Amino acid sequence: MSYSLQLPAIIRHMIISEQAIEKATHKTWKEWLRFLESIDASKLTHKEIAERLYQDGGAPGWWAQMITVAYEQHIGRRVPGQDCDGEFSVSVSKALDGTMDQALGKWLSLIEGRKAFSDIPVSRAGEVITTDKWRYWRAGLADGSRVNVNIYEKAPDKAGLSVQHEKLESSDQVDHWRSFWKKLLQHI
Image (cartoon, rainbow, N blue to C red; front, top):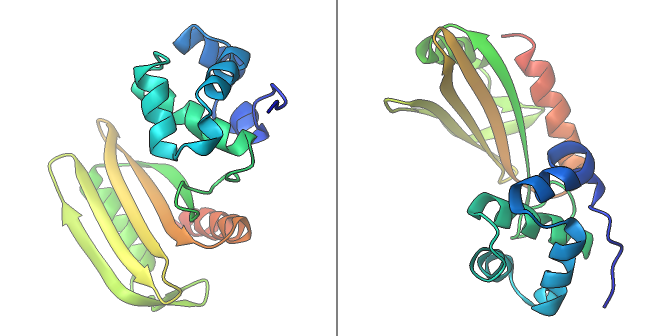
């Protein structure tokens, strides 16, 4: 089976370039496609493809995952934003002045009293978890999706806050929630 040798648009434009793949792995996208076809990757699971890329193809771990995702999009097994289980997720982030605890405080103030996000009721109340390196806030929504806020130290007195929304059902939901979370984070 022969496919176009061009990287999927999401990989080409948003995540990674052919040049980055070649620089990191010392193989072109065309060479990776030949390797993947030689191992009949279209009949393998995501995990099996990544393992073969790593063990037999010599792709470093993270790059084995990226090449696997690009390949799965390339053959139409998944679309951008879709994970290997067929679910969708979206992540939106923002850098904030202050410590991790201050960033968590800003998030909690922003959502205080909310019973819903974008008219979807909260089904599992937000839970805060703290570690030395992270601050987390987790909640479930009535549609079965899950919201995870991850806060980490970017630099002294600078924190990164990322809202990750998982278990979405479609790329349309990804677009909706990306817009919703970006607008909400503008108020922090």
